[in-house]
Length: 157
Image (cartoon, rainbow, N blue to C red; front, side, top):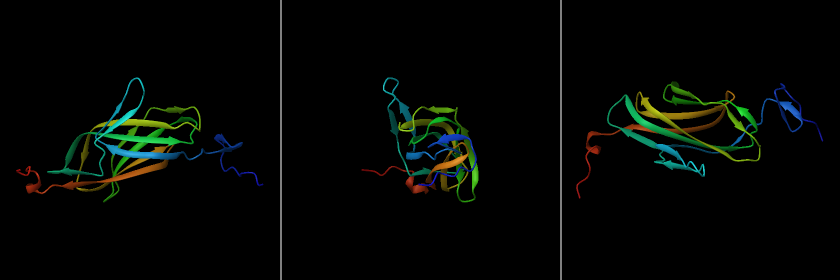
């Protein structure tokens, strides 16, 4: 059996100094709000969606929640989340999270983040990009669509 070859030493992994093991992302979801129970630490995701509708642009969404769950990570990590307008690769916003300590590679760690007041410049495809130590580990895209004027009226029953 061959020993693993290490490119650049920074963290120990399987007896070898390496950059870091890429965590296994179990979920990366976009919703209106993430609520965490103060006793159980269970997360509730409110309003999971794949698209948003807006009457006009730029469109301000009052709050957006992100949930991610991962395993196969151990140590202290720096996470960043980018929101990118895919039509022209424009960075809409970047959120930097406080350092997160994960104690055991076998544990499943989940995180909920609420982002207040996002502004979407135009209709199209958007993508959240989750980075850990500067490396992309997950992506989630969704659409923001312009509603036609007849869609804003509730149908009569």
